[in-house]
Image (tube, rainbow, N blue to C red; front, top):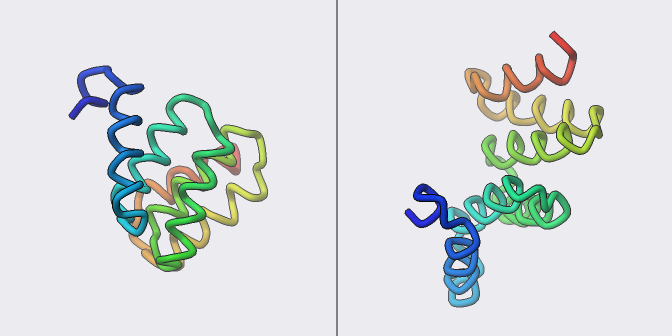
Length: 106
């Protein structure tokens, strides 16, 4: 909720407190990755999404979000690979298809 009302720093701090209690909370780790990506902390955002993927390799959302991190970093091939992986897992994932098209410049 803090992130929604524009208190991103506070929300990230609270989220990290939660992860200190339960580092295996994948929803919290995904939210952390999203908040870090919004702050353009791509190194830590990518690490958060990779952590989710280590624990849940079939997370289409984590692949898609990691692809967005790579796309924003200009790492187009890495981004395309993540979007493709998301679509292998969930073929009807419209956001991943849209992002793959973006990565191809369509």
